[in-house]
Amino acid sequence: MNGKPRQSGAVVDGVDWERWSVILCKPDAVDRGLVDDVLGRLAAPSVEIIARMTVKVQPWQIHVHYWDLLVDRDWFPGRDIPACLDAEYAGRTVVVALAYGRRGVHSWMRDQLGHFDPTVAAAGTIRGDLGEDSLTRAIAEQRLVRNLVHTSDHPAAACRDFGIWFGAGRRALLIPHQRAATT
Image (cartoon, rainbow, N blue to C red):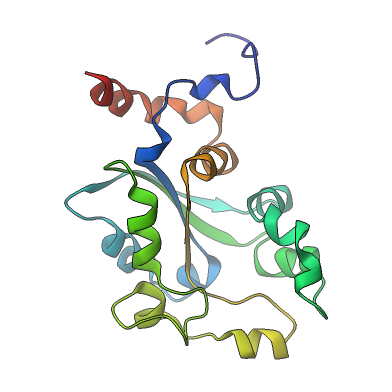
């Protein structure tokens, strides 16, 4: 594709986002050397990790990624959410991965993560087994919970997450699998 697409998002037209998820291994997973463990637990016979890259987070990326926290920041009294996002992510290293699996892969992946508060997450989940933080501690320290990993929670989020972390310049990652899904 040369030039700007005819409409926003057109570079990913025809992609079956029911099969794709973006995995964000957060700074705490990177700092603790848990990226391979986390990705290994998310790769399954029905889920393939297509691409993986290390990213130094730009403030815009994390603000767009966590737009819901910014919109709902009134739910977080005593915390300056934009400042929390900047402190936890901006200029720090994360690892992003692109996963392809069966339709509905999002709910399966989210089940593997466990509850966002590692102290509440069930044993056998990534956050339950590997998490060290707690919501109580995060609130006391006026910051966000460090819970290792994010995955896209629905198809529209997967498309948005792909744009944030991979961008249109890497859309070729989607093409071989897209052709296979339609034949």
